[in-house]
Image 1 (tube, protein in one colour):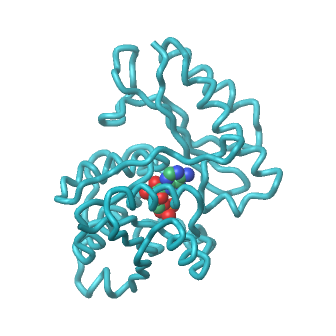
Image 2 (cartoon, rainbow, N blue to C red):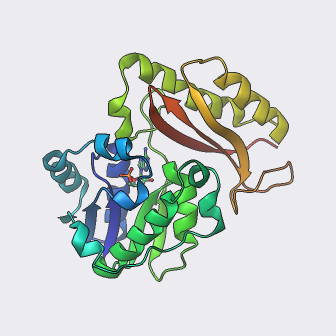
Length: 250
Ligand code: AMP
């Protein structure tokens, strides 16, 4: 049996947790590292995406990978390849702000699965909308989810965090503060107020969205929604950051 952990490299402890989880599923663990141009609607973001291949090989191996796979663009996208559609959820939130992003994600995942032929694949809850869309692809590959790994102060680990200054990193902490403060709110309305008021304390955070959704389909949550989750996206020092947290208040 083979377990695939798809990544874009610049590996950190979040990726390591995925690889370790993969290793509990089987000993044949492949980590793919491919910065997928199809999912970058912003050229500057693609150009500035950190690249640390040597270090990635070490981190992946230490975490338990027995193969680190660097596919070439041509391997994944032979001439005449077709872009897949992520469906309606692909146009909401991250998809609304990043047109075509999720089409690029489902296309690369489909190609990675077709070539590596894994039995299972591991993805992070950090990218919760991505995870939901990939689960909905209904491929034969079993999708295993891993909770978000955070820094000691709550900041969600992300390859993009290295682009933040020390001050920017402090600003970015407001995202986790807002999520953690809203988590136990008794109603969706109160949770929403807490998100808004907490985020507004930090002028350096440029909000894109901060809202409570039904995990099923990302429709607006109400107090009857069984599984609701707060999702936040925005920019700090021009770097796009996203995070999310399950809401447990009743
Ligand atoms: P990326 O390299 O950013 O495309 O991420 C590759 C995989 O790692 C995706 O499934 C992400 O959701 C997951 N991931 C990224 N950051 C984290 C994190 N902090 N905790 C858990 N999983 C993560």
